[in-house]
Every structure is written in C-alpha cells, then in structure tokens.
Image 1 (cartoon, one colour):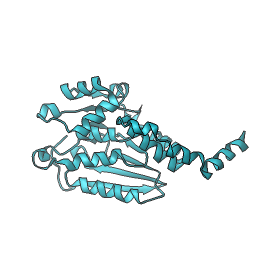
Image 2 (cartoon, rainbow, N blue to C red):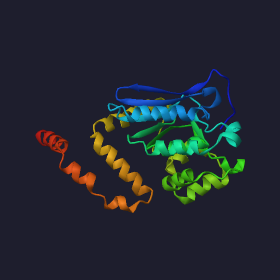
Image 3 (cartoon, helix red, strand yellow):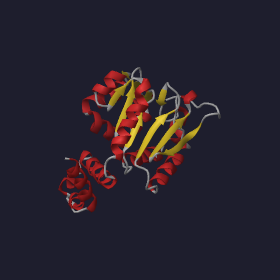
Image 4 (cartoon, rainbow, N blue to C red):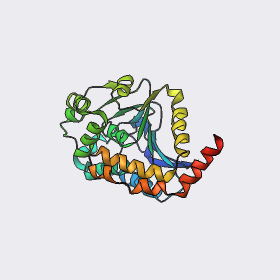
Length: 250
C-alpha cells in the first residue's frame, strides 16, 4: 500500500488482443495502488468482457518493474473502504474465464487478495509480499480471509495475517501463493505458455469446470453431486469432433 500519487497516474486500463484481455494497473509511481474510483472502472471492464465471446482468458498485471500493486489507497481506508472493494474481488474470483495474475513485481495488502482471486499467479524473482492489516489495526474482511485459508491453509494464513511479515519470492512459491516463479525476462513467455494452453481447450468445458472447482473449494458439497455439465459434455458434438481428431492422429 502507498499514498496517492499525482494526477499523471490513471485508472487501470483494458487491452484486448489475440483472444486475451489484460487489465493493467497504471500507477507505477505510486506502486500501482488501487484507488476507490478504480473499482467501478474495473467492474466495467469485467462486464464488458463477460459479453465478449471471443475472449478466452483474462490477465491482471501492473505497469513498471517494481510493484504489481500495493493494494487499496492508504488514505482512503477510513472513509472509502466499503463493501464495494470486497464485492469487486468476489467478482474477479467468480469471473467465468480463466484468470492469470502476471505479478511483474512485489504485491502488498489488498492486492495480495486480488492475486488470490485469480486462477494462476506467476511471479518474478526478487519480488516480495506482505499483508499489513494487523499493523494498521484492521480486521480483514471475511472473503479475503476465506481465500487465504483456501489457497494457503490456516497455518500460512495465520503467519501472514498475524505477524505481517514480509515474504520473498521463493517462499511465496513454496507456500502456494505463486503458481510459478520465473526470471523477470521470462514472465511474458510463461504467461503466453498458459494462454496458449488454455486456447487449446474447449471454452464451455473450461467455464463449467472452473465454476465447479470454485464451488468445491468453497465447501459446496452439492457441487460434487452435480453431473449435469459432465453429461452435457459427454453428449456434445464438440467432444465427438475433438476425439475424432485425436483418433486420426494415432
């Protein structure tokens, strides 16, 4: 987290190309902080992408080479940190397409939770993270605590929340915060590797399996008994087409 920068910094922008959408934080001089006014902007980006059929994946990243994001603006916590920020992160978590967090640098505060909302987190060596809520005297909101425990387990969640210790990149990978850790110059290539793999998969099946995996991770045992998506895919023409292609290659 950091304090507000000058007006040269701007709200996160949306880039679309090659079936991939990228939301980029655009305040590098302020460690890519998330301003309260950014929340409706990002929600608007998500709504636009939900209605764009050709998009196959969404990437979150930051500008510059120092910080992915420092989280919610510090001097707005007392008067502007309301349910809207938590609701935004819930929307990112439940976004139907695969989401990748390309951590171009360190990550702090609420931005660590935003990263956990994504399906994959790819970080760079030399980066670090910490969650300073307890130092500020802030009891973190329930959705963020749930994501931390679900992704990292209770022990690591306690370590990060109850001590506010700084954790470096290799430990971020070991504890499961990062999906992959690469050299800085290899970040885009690794992101592209994931995106290319996603594009080879059937979009509808990706959406239905992500939805069900998220439900199971949240403790929704009813999802375990749901067979509708499985049976629909089993009867689909797309499965037959793809299997026929594989058989021809054998």
